[in-house]
Every structure is written in structure tokens, then in C-alpha cells.
Length: 282
Image 1 (tube, helix red, strand yellow):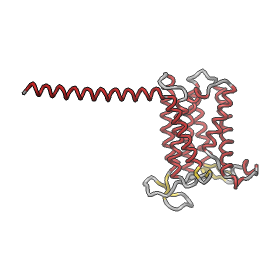
Image 2 (cartoon, rainbow, N blue to C red):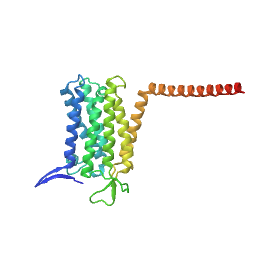
Image 3 (tube, one colour):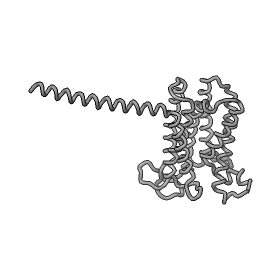
Image 4 (cartoon, rainbow, N blue to C red):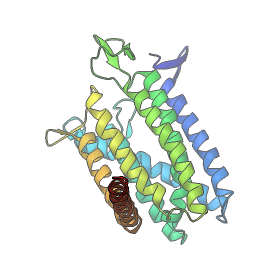
């Protein structure tokens, strides 16, 4: 693992920091390309982006501090000094970012649901790049495994799951799917907000699965916070998708039942015809 990418004298450039910058630049570029497809003002959207980043950072830090309150207490300096007292929560970042984006866009009278189709793919892309950085920096350590795709982390015994790369692959798949949904919505083949609902369900499912393979956890009431939050996200997203597409799902089930009935009827008629022909032959 390479926690420090460049070390020149007293200057240290951390791998995770570099990949976070790359994630931001890639996501900003992808967002810019998406926004060009719409009538939204680019300046307004990017103002919202920068405000959202601040809200995401604040949310990530607040959730981490609350879950580790015995270490931080009410010491405001420990909260501010991230380098000295590191720790951020990804779920906190998503919640803080969403709340900030919602409030900002509401003040500009822009629908977050409609905008989400253009925001979710860049978000998946940013998560993909950030997780690659997390793997290279060694900040996400997996549990011990004999699986061929495993690595040895410095200072930790045994070969470990490459959990950050697992997440990166899942998020890359999410990026591809959400881009397809974006154009499906633009062609009126999917309903507005589908990308957002899918993101909530998909992200929750990924974290719920992968969290069991991680060594370090944040705990709430003795349970893994990421597993709890992941399960909640998955259920919420799945319910929203089922509610939004309930008519479509009902129609699909109805079509399947009709096809099954037709198949049974056709088979029965063929059997009857075959029996009649056999009787005539005799």
C-alpha cells in the first residue's frame, strides 16, 4: 500500500488526498457534460456543487464524531483538526450532501428529483475513483481470507479482502447503469427520480454486503453503523422503486400470467387434438 504518494522534505502528498481531488475533477467534468444536455444554468448548478461538498464534509465529520463521541467529547479542536484526529463517515457525507443540495436547489426553485438524473452518474464515478484511492492508501482493510484476490497490508497479519476494490467495481457498474437510466428518462422510458431511488437502494445493498468483509467498523448500540445504514438505505430505495413502478410491475405480472394461461390452453388443445386424431386413425 502507498499511504504517502510523494514525500519531499517536510512536504507530504497523501495518496487518498490525490484520489479525492481526481474524484472531484472527474465528477465535476461528468456533471458539466450532463448539465449541457439541459436548460439549467451551469453557474447555478456548480454553485450548488461546491455548497454540497461543504455540506457533505460537515455531515461526514459530524456522524463520525457522534459515533466516536468518547474519543472527541465536546472538544471543538478535535472536531476541526481532521489530520490530527482523522475520521469521516461516507453515509454522513451522503446525507449531509443531499440535505445541502436539496436546500440550495429549493432556494433556486430547481427540482432535486429531476436534477438527480444528471447528478447520480457523476456521484457513482466519484465513489469509484475514491475507493481506488482508498485501496491504494490502505485505509480500508478487509478481513482475513484465503481468496486468491487478496493482499497483505503493512502492520496487519494475514492476507486480506480487497474490499475497497470490490466497492469500486460495484460503483463502476452503478455508474454505467445510472447513465443508461439518464437517457431512458430523457426518452420518457423511465420516470424522473429513478436514478436517485436506484442509488439509495444500490448503495445500501453494496455497503450491507461489503461491510461484513471490513476489519474496522463504526458502531451504534453495539451494531455496525454501516450495516444498519446500508440496510435502511436498501429498504428505503427498494420501497420507493416498488411504489413508483407498482403499475408497471403489476402489468408485467399480469402479462406473465396471461402468457402462462395461453401456454396451458395451447398445450391442452394440442393434447385434445392429438387424442382425436389417434381415435380417428383407429
